[in-house]
Length: 165
Image (cartoon, rainbow, N blue to C red; front, side, top):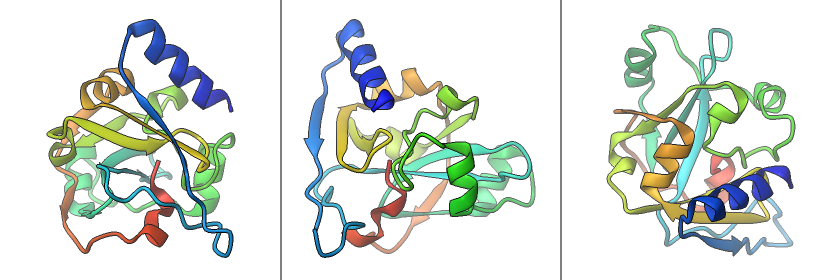
């Protein structure tokens, strides 16, 4: 997959340490992946009818749409539908969009709480593989702007990691 190779090439040429992971898919439920136990980033898209924005937050936090609206300076924001995600990321599996919206011309907003972590795990275009890298590298390569995005929410279960990237 192009995203995977692009990211690995970037990390290696920059000398950034990383770990790759093969997802353990449940054959009975192919939508279920096992990324628990790591600091997992969730990627969601807000305001697709305006200018889309890519939001990166912890998988165990809920997106606070009013905070997103303040960050985007747009009072009415909503999360993108699956169809809209498919249009914005045609070369990615649904739920596996990378946190590099800048690769698609989409600004990236990184939640302050997630930004405090030392490293982060996310999918990079495919739910078959994920990658863990230093938070500083994610922030640098995504051109992310730090903002408050989430509120403590219910813990996300493995089967709900459909928006993890």
